[in-house]
Image (cartoon, rainbow, N blue to C red; front, side, top):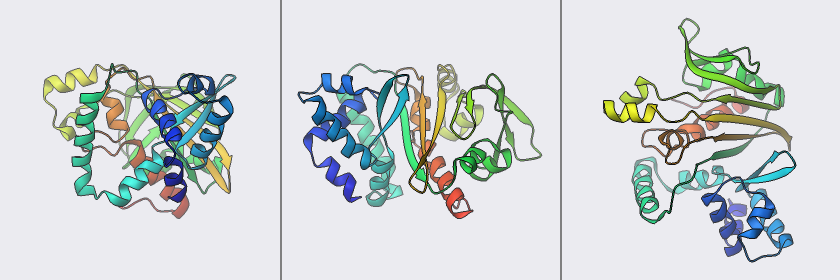
Length: 269
């Protein structure tokens, strides 16, 4: 964690992270416009933040977009905030955000992790039903993974495949996978204790999408997960990012995936 704390010690770098927290996915030009710093200085600060894992990048056409990465911050929180105190900390943070935040924008979730595996093995973990069952809590993701094809959810090898309206958007084996996300289901309402009215309202949210980018890095691969296309104030965004009480979201699921690929066994339930 030394690199993370060193990166956070500089006020200019904290301002860059604040800017990305307000609006994720900015280019170097956009970040420079909001800061009284030379382009070269901003580039150097971003390099430090990226080396510490606090910022991750993704290409969109000719532009290189910068995203705030939650993984190192989550690791710090896990080290010093016990799980019995975490929900209280979340509640206080949510209250402060609600009181201080300005107009809401469309949120984006970005998470980067490094896994000691191969691109081929990681692709198999994302697309093979027998593999997904081991870290998706017994759920198999079933599809031929061709763009335009449906993505079905199946409760174990003997379960019935359910069509939740998800569609494969992009599929480049061992490199990139993208599909639309599902709406909330009745089991979510039961899990979170929602009333019928709350469930109806949350279920009507705009559908989002999730994208997995796989890149060779170090002795393994770098996996970047971007979940976007939410509407402002999305409850689904809170759920997938682990910010909704009772949800582990992508951070928990990706930790299980990493553990499974590196040790051969999933995290204990």
